[in-house]
Image (cartoon, rainbow, N blue to C red; front, side):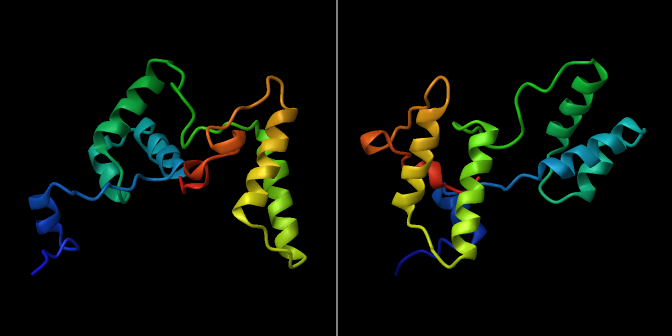
Length: 138
């Protein structure tokens, strides 16, 4: 009989602990504001789902010290913000007129936008196209 890996206990036993989702950037900003107003990171983190007290306390400490955020929140992008917006608009406009795009069509559009940037963006997939991980959810 196969072990049931959907159970938390069996996942722990098999070493396959599910990756924990993290709170959104907006939730962290709200939590930081509450901490700066005087609430403790432990109390604030408990009010939000999937927010680490340790991470929140570190971010609040950095803000109080005047240190800038080390990196942008969320997944890094290869395309510029302008190119990301252009690609997003292209996908949405295509869907609104009933022309669904395939992964390959989106990848070609992303490569074209990346080639126009200075310096040109190089993707890791076949033929210089975005690979499967580029399409992954953040």
